[in-house]
Image (cartoon, rainbow, N blue to C red; front, top):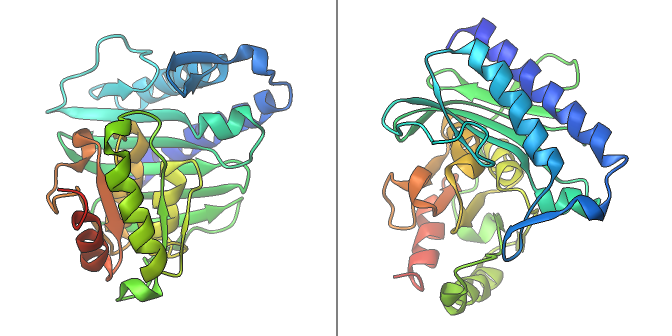
Length: 268
């Protein structure tokens, strides 16, 4: 991906974020729909995704799409080049007026993310990167700055982010054991409600680690690319590289191995 394409990608993400803020001002709970238990969606998610698909189709016509709200109908062949889109990551926050949500756009070659942009419209922060070129943050109209993961090397130095499952509650006992363990071994745990923002914060060193299961590719395609380009480590819960479509992910800095071990103690 050229610098020109990456600049265009940031503009597309920023335009989508501006639309989210515009709609948030007049949003009503009457507009909420349910895709499943605790799985919320609205016209804002759907319309934002349509706008993103239209813009991205012109940017890289050869790329397919993997989208949360199904704008493109049948999902593309996952072995090829695909845009992986979450038009509104943090829908529940958005619906309740909590200003923690984002636009996440990843580009993947098969199972490997190769470029990504995460835009937080509430803080006007745009995180972006591509394979081999590093990860950056752009605040407003300021010059982009390179970002790096935290220099922490032990779990005792870490502030860790996670998400709470809203389905597959059969694994809840294991998950609660992990929470209990990490509460005693770290500086603390945080639940932001947007996996994309969690991963962006790992990439820039605000969090030392992030883990979650029950995720989808659109939740983490951009964020995992950013963490790796910022010098971090990303694996699935088994320590492998199948996180993108498998749904469980552990991302972190030099304390990643210790964080993974703490998770695997209870997650067999």
